[in-house]
Amino acid sequence: MPATQDRPNIIYIIVHDIGQHIGCYGAGVETPNMDRLASDGVCFTNYHCTAAQCTPSRGSIMTGRYPHQNGLMGLAHIGWEFHFGQKTLPMYMNEAGYETHLFGHQHEHADPSPLGYQHLHSPDRNSARVVAPELIEFLHAHAENPGDKPLHISVGFGEPHRPYHRDDYAQDDPAQVTLQPWLPDRPGIREDIAGLNGLVWVVDEWVGNIRQALEETGLEDNTLFIFTTDHGTAMPRAKGTCYDPGTKTALIMRQPGVIEGGTRYDDLLINCDFMPTILDLVGAPEPLEIAGRSFLGLLAGGDFRPHEHIFTEMTWHDRYNPMRSVRTDRYKYIHNFGDRPLVFMPLDIWNGRAGREMAWEYYSEKRPEHQLYDLEEDPLELNDLAADPAYAEVLADLAATVDSWMADTDDPLLLGDVPPMPKQAHRARPPYQTN
Image (tube, rainbow, N blue to C red; front, side, top):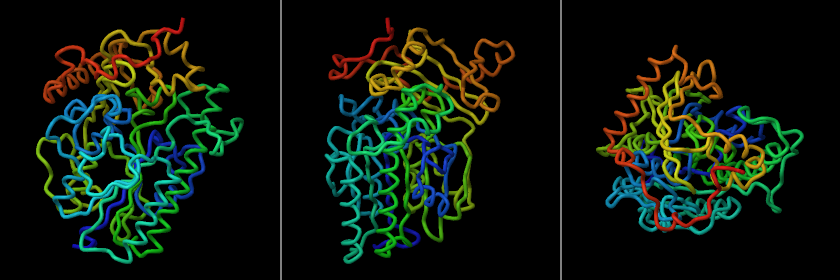
C-alpha cells in the first residue's frame, strides 16, 4: 500500500563519526540545513550509541541488540558478522509491507546483500556528493510512479570519517574553530577540527538538497525524515571510548503534522531503541529478545518508559580493548578489562594530527580497572571518583549493575578474552607505549 500518515515513507541518513558535532547541538560548526531540520522537527540531546565504533553501533541500530548479543563485537571489514539467524530492520520492514532500499554506504556487513534490503544502489560508494544525487533522482522518479508500497530507505554517507584533510573539501580556519571542550587547545587539534568542519559542511549541504527534493516532489508530507550517526567524532577521548563524547550521537526526526515543532528531548535513550521505535510507528510487532524499546510514546504523548540505565561497550577495534559501562542521568561507571592505555585511540585517530598531540599522555599511563564520574558535577568526565570513599556505595551499585547486565545478556567476555577474527590478528596496530 502507498505511504499514509499511519505508514509513512521512512528515509534515514546515517553518517560516520559526527557525534553531536552539529550546530543545533551547540557545536561551533555552521550547519544551517540540519539546524533547520531540528527546528522543524525534533532533536534528541541525550541519545547514545551502544559502542563508540562503526560496525558495533550500526549493528545495534539494525537489530535493537547490544553488540555482544548480535555478534558484531568488531568491524565488519575485518571479519565480524551477525550471529546466524539474526534479523535486521530492513527484514522486518519487508514483512511490514515496505519497499526497502539502501543508498550508498553501510558498515554492518562486508557484503550488503545479506542485510535484507530489496534494492541496493551504489553500495560500494560512500561520498555524499555521489550517493545523495542518486537518491534525489530516485525520489523524483518515484514521485512520478509511486507504486503500491511505502518506502524504507537507508542512506549512508562516509563523511565526516577521517582523513579530515582532503584536497577536494574545504576546511575551516584553524585559528577560528571552536574547540571540543574535553580537549586542550593545541595546534594539531585545531587543524583536525578545521578539517572535520569542512566534511560536516558537505554533509549539511546534501541533507538540505535531499529535503528540497522531498519538497519539490510532494513526498515530504508523508515522509519521516531522520538524520543520525553511528558514534562520536574521530577525535581523542571520543570515538573508541565509553566517555560521552564517544557515545552521544545525533538523532533528528521530522514528519510534518506528526513529529515536528522544534522540541528538544533530553530523555536518556540508546540506539537499540531505534528499531523498535520505527516498527512501532508503522504498526509492526516488536521483536522478542531485543534490548531496546520504543520511544514513540515520548513523541506521541502515549506510554513511555524511560531508561534508568543504558549500557555501552567496546571489545575489538584495531586492537583488543574490552570495556563495559553503565550510564544513568547522574553517573557514568566504566569497567576496564586487562592492562590498557589511559585512553585508547583507534588507528585513524592515532595517525591524525590530534592523535599525535595526545599520544604521549594517553599511552604512557594505564587506566584503572574501575572509573566513576559524576556527570552533574563533571560533565566532561575528567575527575575519576572511583577511589573516593564518599562514592564507594555508588561505585559498588553501578559495578553490580554492569555485572548483572553482562550475566543476563550472556556476554562472552565473562568467559575470558574474546579472540580476534583471523583478518584482525595480523593487522598493523599502534603500540600501547609511545617510547
